Amino acid sequence: MAAGFKTAEPLEYHRSFLKENCRPDGRELVEFRTTTLNIGSISTAEGSALVKIGNTTVICGIKMELANPSVEAPNKGYIVPNVDLPPLCSSGFRPGAPGEPAQAASQFMADIIESSEVVKTEDLCIERGKLCWVLYCDLMCLDYDGNLLDTCAIALLAALKNAQLPEVTVNAETSLPEVDLKKRKPLQIHRHPVASSFCVFDNSILIVDPTGEEERLSTAQLTVVTDEDGRLCSVHKPGGTSLSGERLQECISRAQVRHREIRKLIDKVAQSVTSGK
Image (cartoon, rainbow, N blue to C red):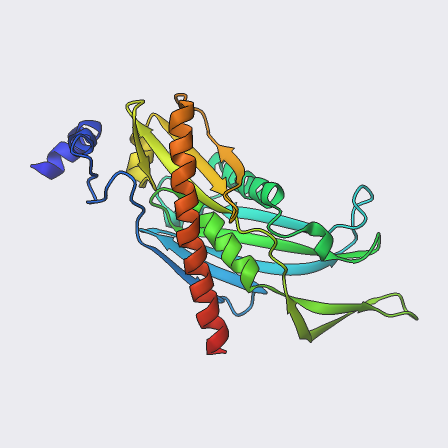
């Protein structure tokens, strides 16, 4: 009977739980799903991480390439994020060119990198105006069940913390770069941005970490990105109904608590990877 009600009237089905201050999966309104992290899982990448929030699963691999800095920023390298939503992760995505959700997620990741300065692009410059690193951060969703942005943000941060830059010198005689793959140094992480996503139901009820179905039924979505100092790096709100200042402050406060939880998780897993080597 419950299954039939859920299929026929999904919104009413969710409302019946929300009015009791809980959700169909048993969570409280402000409770995140179990979050797991695996670091260094792709041996062919310079840095990698696999993250699961509930069923939503994202893997991030980082590849590095040498390039010429731009004329406008001769002392900076590049960080290029790309989010891929293949059909295997959800029947809602089609093969072919990236759709709007994938493009929006890639842009969101680029905004996080820029606004938080997680890695300073100056650190990627090898020789001013001549040589720099490009970091290609490829994020692929393996299973989609809502809250893609939070999952991608954790995967990106953990993969960057796992990445190591090989030593590069420029040969004085040939002017060609020489890469020493045996000598590597970790990327310097300046900030630790963490995203927290929320949904609003019926323009009034606020929930965190929405599932795919909760996202579809909500009247608004919001993602708040904070760093370790509680600083607001960015707020992403793709349309929907407006939020009061009070509600926004509620989201920021919850995001700051979530930041501490995720930072602890990343540090714990990174430590176990280091001690396991």
